[in-house]
Image (tube, rainbow over all chains, first blue to last red; front, side, top):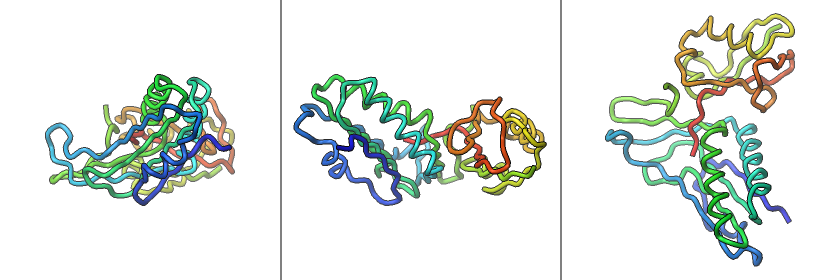
Length: 140
Length: 80
């Protein structure tokens, strides 16, 4: 059975759907990371975020992360989904769900996935404030 | 050869287009492409970093670009 689920969506993510994919009788521990849009950056209120992705490469890079996580940690299944388009504070941008026989590897694999995703996956977010907008992390 | 660079994020703002045509010598490397881009768009050098993807994979500086390759500029990513 397929052990990796990778998707980029322009509609709302579903934690239930991802949990259903990852859940199986072999996994006694399931770890979830949910990344939401924060309502401020450095004390400035954030109005909205716009996410864009180089979709075919982003999918490949997310698959690479999931494959690497499966080889590095004793985990069974993994689901990584990222949303693109316009998101408001409180909305969910990314969900990672990892299932493992025991909790320790599920925690560690989940952390590995989100940390690596932030470094390698070609997805960009633009933060909109009351007085302008910036591409996040573009400049030193 | 002429190739078209696809741009995302801040690179699209710097180029003022998401599809930049660029003339390169045959067998140019990724490094030569970066030099030409930075000559035309000095703002690129002010970014924290940027990468070039060739055929949907991060390409090292010594990779040679062929006319049929898909070439994309990847400014600092900020997903998650």
